[in-house]
Every structure is written in C-alpha cells, then in structure tokens.
Length: 294
Image (cartoon, rainbow, N blue to C red; front, side, top):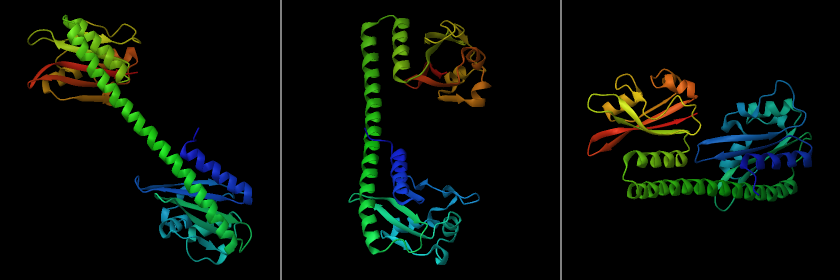
C-alpha cells in the first residue's frame, strides 16, 4: 500500500538524515498549486534557528536546484554569499557544507532535495554523482505517490458522479412506482440524504395561497423529534420562506445559521448548517428542498 505523499517524503528524508548523520531537507514544489512545502528532518536543532516554513521559496537552495535543474554544491556555508538566511540557519545548526539536487522524472519536475554536513567540503564530484542517482530514485517514488493520489481523486469524483446518476435513476423509478405525492417525496428525501451525505433532508410545500410552508416530507433518522413532518415554516422570517419567495438558493452555516429563524428548531436537533434550494418548474417555485448536517 502506497503511503501519502507527505508521509513518504518525511520517511525518505529521515532515512537520509540517518545515513549521513546530518539535517536533511526535502522541498517539494507543486506548480499546479503554486506553492512549495518543506519537509525537514533535523538532528541537533538549535534554539533560535529560523524554521524552514519561514523561508520564502526563492531563499531555499533547493528552489534554485529545482528551477535550474542542476545540483548546487556549497563547500563552505560560512563563505557562501547566496541564500543568506538559509546559510545563517545552517550555521546555527552546525552545518558547514550543503548540497541540493533537483527531484525530476521524465514526466515532470517535482522539487529539490537538500542535504547538509557538519564537515566542510563534504560533497565532492563522486559524492554528488551518487546523490544524483539517489535523488532520481526519490523523484520516482514521489511521482508514483502523486500519481496514486491523482487516481484516488479521480476515483472519488467518478464515484460521486455514479452516485448522482443512481439518485436520478432512483427518483425516476420512484415517480413511476409511486402515485401518492407524500410517499414519492419520502423516497426522494431518503435517497438524497444517502447520496448527498446529509443528516436531514426535507421538502416544504406551500400550504395553500398566502399560507406558511408545510414540511411535507422529512428524512432525519438521527432526529430527536423536534423537527418533523407537518411542521409549519413561516413565509416571512424563515430561510425556507425567503428561498420560496425569491427563487434563489440559500446556504447557512456559522453565525448566519445560528441567527436564522429555522435554527430555533435546529438548535435542539443539533444541526450545524443548512442548504435551502427552490424547487422550480417553468419559472415557478413549487416548494423548497432542505438539506442539513449535524
């Protein structure tokens, strides 16, 4: 089983630190997300040193290696004039020389791998050649992990699409099999609650002209009984009434949800957020679909 990218990077970095007995930093840049993140394993961390997260990407040696696609060898941290904040941090940790290598596969550039040594001039040509081979292997592992992550996301999206299609199919079958409106709406609300991963789904319909909305169907297995079918929802001052009158959806959470009229009932039920959708047909609002989560 593949490990998550973050965990895998940390394990690889820790193995470098164990092999060389020095701090090692693996910095992975995600061009698609437009950001970089640093994974650091350190031995002998000194108080007052600048954390890796405080560095701007361009201040990192690994950033230069990533963009130039070449190893960066710093024989002496004390005399290096580039990357001043980074060099100060390495010196605070007792690092006297450093090396950064690009993490790249034939498919894409992934980031940079940085290593430091407590000895000056620790990275000669032979050492850099060896570390380049190791960095290539690290890049392959990270690329595999990223590909696996992308496959998981694609699978989850496909599953969501399949669930939505299943919902449409179940609703269609319910329409054919149920002629009584309340039974039909109960089947629909139960199906939607399962597919949409909600805790409560209801349908409110107008109780005659110029009358409040009535909660005609409700699926809320975890409910305590305060929110139930046949409840009347005022047309004025309630989220459902507002959506029915305007024909526009409304999502409430946090302070907006707690201050809404429907929360007076939702509070005792423990509901934390709600979404209210108009049921439209030929530019006419027929009712309101309510979805809520605990």
